[in-house]
Image (tube, rainbow, N blue to C red; front, side):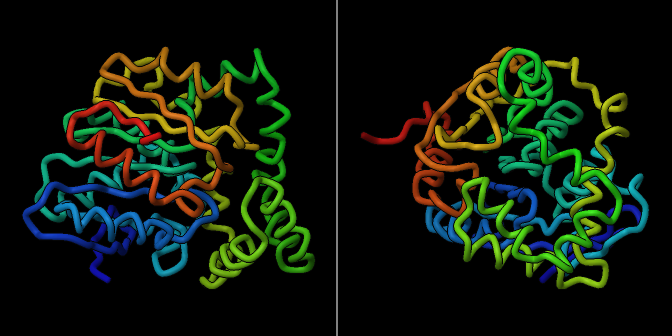
Length: 283
């Protein structure tokens, strides 16, 4: 795979599609491998788009910098900016799922000039998520974040009680086979799950550093699944408040894991959104 340097971190990415086509940057979540986007990217290249699938820092097949500070959201956004600069691109369609959605929101805050369109899947705007903790059952659904932030805890559970870790992931809606495959993949690198988990452990560092008060101005599509066991409908619908530009909200039947479950529906919505239309699933 091609690679580039972001600061002192070497990152790899996949590319599919014509060299001079419109660019789509795909940002995966936790604990997904970046190739979860491949079926979607393959379909987009057939429609004339060029996909860049970033293997984000801390994950297998890329560098795992030590220290939680190296996983601040500002640096994760700089990785995306560095990817675009490395290929000489001035803008791209940005698509993020789960934690990749958080990176996408932050990029749209910091560098709206780089965002031709924004699509976020299964991750509400951070301010919407924070507000929903007070007005819905979102706090109960987000309980898992606390143990993920405790140093070494989840690594030890996954090492000595792998079935327990898989059962937790399956409880979020991911099928058992995929949950097992994702967790095994995440542990292939020299530091195992520590890199991906440092994204959660850096949350306290992000709270005061992100410009969440700035409105989102790029054209935005937010996709939420009715069966999402992680994100409440309150958090999903509150997202509209924080987008000042054109905004579409689409619901899909499914769990939190839409790239794995509903790639065909996502491609349909993405193509409509990229082409400037209103994104809707055909009845």
